[in-house]
Image (cartoon, rainbow, N blue to C red):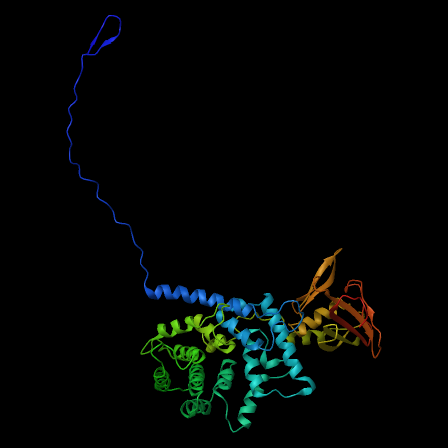
Length: 441
């Protein structure tokens, strides 16, 4: 190839030589494969099953009704949700307020006319009251724990294992006689429900062993656990779903859950029983299974999560008694429902010319459950919520304030702020949660 004078190129041809060289490819790095053990996968399945079961329990709440939102199974629903997660019944949330209120209504209806509660009711309601932050030792002046203990002792000391567990969880002192009862119950229940009672007896004895001054032979608990382990079938169950869950709780309480017992096979059996709606078999099955999926047991029922009132009832009473000045006798009532589903009344001697607001605040101090909340309009408070029950525009239920003279049939609707209205001697202040018909009670 050469250049010409006219700047053009004269191609005379060219040749290209090349050869192939073998070059080794860069080393390949195999992809990282993250493997998870079957147990890790199963733990995730347990977490998902727990969430679905909690949602199922929450779904039992009835909508569109002001009372009885949770139905007759409320005591067990409250316990199950608490054992699943204390946050479900944390002081201040809606669920806790509703359950606190409804448990109170249900129990008061059973106690109408000074009635006596059956042991079955006492053993169901005492733990439910505890998790809903209602003191069972001072339920409207009644010590329900002492009543249950008295009933057991008056029946020759014969109590079911669950009743003894309830007493223990409520802080009732366990005696050597109680310990012997639990051991006797474990050895004597030769019936189809034998294993259920044995598991509950084991839980009760484990609770008693944690109390100061109570002597429980550790070998007795381990022997009980060993006997329960013998009941497990090859598919992981113990008799049925409910009993399997109870036995798991009992073994967990003794600290011997995964020794000579196929815990994960039992868990797989519980998971396999979960239905499409999230429940596990029957209601009772679900009630016992949820604590297991939450790594909890009936032994964990307490009231430790409840906030204590800043002012005790005795302190509030002393404050009332120490007030100086002339006094008048008045009453204050809280009424729920247009047809008076519940009415609670306090009789007070207060300083003359006390405002309705000051009386509401005094009742709240005497009974911390009567928490009153207000909306502030033009700088003045108006009642909007009592006991956590709020004005509800959708259902048309609101809080109304009335004044009624002693023995009078007619009441006066108070439309001014309670700070501006003074109560007179022998008048009744009524806080009424009812349909907004603006009619007199």
